[in-house]
Image: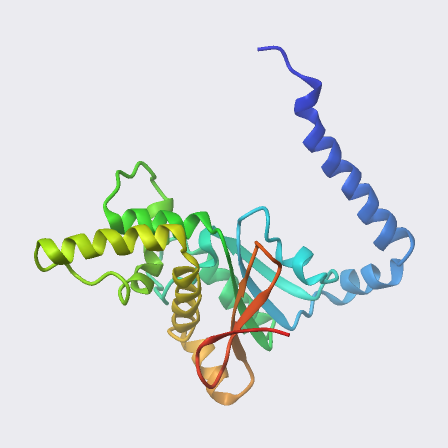
Amino acid sequence: MPHSRDQDVPIRQLLAGMKGFRARYYERRPDSMRQLVEEGQKPKILMIGCSDSRVDPALLTQAEPGEMFVVRNVANLVPPYQPDGSYHGTSAAIEYAVRVLQVSHVIVLGHALCGGIQGLIRLRKGEPDQNDFVSPWVSIASAALDPYIPPAQGDTDEDRRKAEFERLQQKPDVIERAAVRTSVDNLMTFPFVRERVEAGTLELHGWWFDLDNGDLWAINSKTKMFEPVD
């Protein structure tokens, strides 16, 4: 198939964006970037976000270079602490941010219309799965579904389970938020995170962004419930 110039449009847009970034931060404001180069990064926040192209944490928060250490993955999940010698990209980022960079805050940022959470619901529903990596990954948040999908105990319960699955697939925000809670809980399984939280030098936050209307919800530290942020 012949190469189309239209295929180059996304790359040209990115290159234009890089030129704009260089003009803004290296030509108009060189001191800030020079400081980051010479003194290194000193972010106060670790943001754990979703890979979804619609919810870039830096764009949503209008953060400046050097303000946030960001790790993104499918469904913004935090796995439990599991130092088994395997490859753990998200856990490595958490360790680096907390132990080396000494961040003061860790935010798990979930969002509406998350494809990873929809995949989790389909997985628990028993639909055919052909993914090598996505399904095992999203199963990290499987516990988020437990309060809403009880085990089947007969035909009547199975019908109720099917109805609940359909409801959750149509309105998955309850699971998206529950998955954020699961990830915040999993952060506390990391000894170096728990130690600093208990010492009062690190705070954990759970956020959920409503992609439909732009509202932000956050876990209330006292009630553990999500509340809209004014």
